[in-house]
Length: 189
Image (cartoon, rainbow, N blue to C red; front, side, top):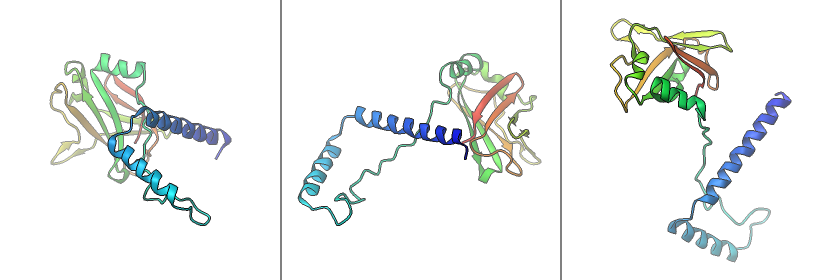
């Protein structure tokens, strides 16, 4: 690993830990958690610590883990997709053991989002780092693996790109292109 990458990873860990601490201090304890905390304090204060260990057993520790999920479209990007294209919640997922990449979006304004469901346009997913362009496969009996019904407000839509050979990996930054619609820099989950 390079030094720059190590620094980025350590900074990401510090930011995640800070966010977790801020969230846990902002939430008031509920009756069940405060009672459990009081009970755990009483039981640990009476018991002597084990030899070379701590007095709190793994069962008494909090099992609620937090997963850090950054805001995908902070600021202008999210506003742009909502205002210009009438969509929100753009997600690119690595699915079916990496054989396909699933792109999904939530429609806010059906008139603006018509272009994304247009059957005449050929959608593509481009990974500029790897120099790969994926397309929506068309099966003989099924047709294209995408939803092509006219969009409706409040509904989610999807399309699947063939990733034969698993060229696009999790964590890659990709661009989804459908006619004039360009969603750049989406991260593959």
